[in-house]
Image 1: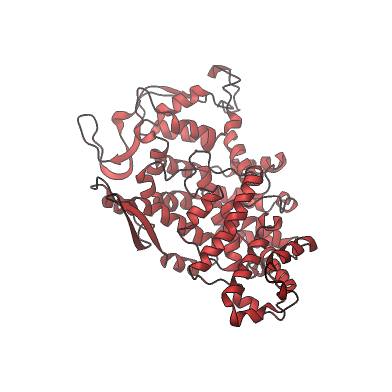
Image 2: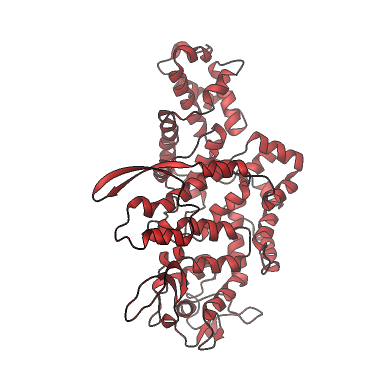
Length: 524
């Protein structure tokens, strides 16, 4: 088994100690330990507690800077709401801190957490239940709650529980406008994405085939095999009144001032409904209509196929086999009401032969590229990564469409996207050096027995990709490194450390950047 390649697929970059542990435990035991998160992660937790950052913002038309420790990520929803509710124009650092700190915590965990598979799943679920922090100030301010208490809490749990937590999250309620949905007519945004993205998927949209619910074929349990627009309209009615306690009080609305989920009965459409061929009684108990919809879609066979297709694409291949998807869907349905449903499905996928047969077929998305480089050379995240990643097309928690970032190589690897990567990877390293942040470049290089250019290329290629580069690529790198330094050909570069330490650091940075831009480093 190519254990290092398997680890590279399910982590943000293989580290030597991680590979050693996997070799000792064996693949199946290592996967089980990862999914159970039995490894101590206190070192990473301490790093998160020590996070600080400088934010630039506008207040009163003037630009300001503020140095902040992590003050919002661990705040409760009431603390966040109380800090904002009485401010007509809260300063930008207060509204953006939740999103910024969640990004910094996410990056720190991706780089340093021992629970790498879990962090990969957190990214998957943030993408699946996408919310953009650019939509509304309170989404950005409270985004840490969405990350901690919705995504991370449920990432290996039960999908039905997960989906209801998402539906009740103020971030999702505001993002897809359900917070403002009331009878006559209901807002359809959330209901449409619930069907099309969160559960059954576009593959089970049958409106182009059937224009009447009576004609839609049914499963053994009598539930329609797919959905049509009528199901979305009816489901939207079921979720009327699911809103946020915004504190609005007038002759029509009397909402509590909490910033949390609130069911407002006066906005709910109480009359009978029909979803996926199932009749709903009128005047059901509070929230029962919406919960009944969630039962129908979360336990639907089509949802098992859609979600397992996406999980197989995430971990195995852009085009997973029907056999793998069917096997994962069977596990999904078997454990539909189990607390560890998602864990069981992920375990099945990661222990499948299909994973081992498709190693190095996935392409790193920009964030994954940055995290894997950071893990290899000791980079620490900074707030500037938001901009650097956006230049490569990765909008951290800001992808505007409910679809989330694409998970297909064809989107991320083309002439335009490659050019952006070639520009941004060196830029990230240069910014790190200019800010005086130390990497492993100099220390490790000076410990080498030989520091001629060929030895340096071989050493750093082994560190980054676990193999030496082809002769052709090595010649190209050597040619670039020797520009205006031809006299160093065949010489020991360690001699530069005494008289030209900055120059050597710069050249090592250039060398590592070029290796990180080779095709091999972009595979996972």
